[in-house]
Image (cartoon, rainbow, N blue to C red; front, side):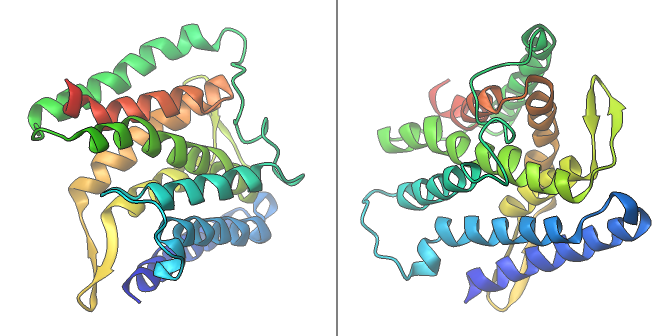
Length: 237
């Protein structure tokens, strides 16, 4: 029940905030795609939680391997549909011509951010499963979803764009980063909602860098690699 309440809170925030933004620019707003984005968030959450515990726990370990794999599978199935498409959502190894030269300094900035975080908040000794999980699953599951299918859906919901730092930004990019932060900082337990501002900052802010890389290169490849670097550096550094 707590998981469903937390999901409900996120969806209410998304639909209210998205609806308010859409009211100010109705010609470049699709309520249908905003609802689709909300459904994507719900599907992702259901997969991560094994349908809130309904599905049996078939994969052992301390980390949520099964939930992550289910969520990744759902993302790939959605990306394969005609309404989305692998190339359109960035699930491609192909990089836009000339983009890697521009992306390299930004990628180094992303790495530097997490190096500073690791030095400021050193973690304890990690076991082999923890290292293996952090080296793989966070980036492999979260980037194709947040910087892939969800970003695509939100960009379809809000089609207005502003050119900044060499890429075309829209409300979809902002909301996808907002939702990524909420996924880590917002929840429901013990009868009330909780929000951690520090966690929100440490997840939502660097996700803007990941979105820039996705938009500039046309691929989630770099965001996946950098995400896993950020999650695992403090464990293996």
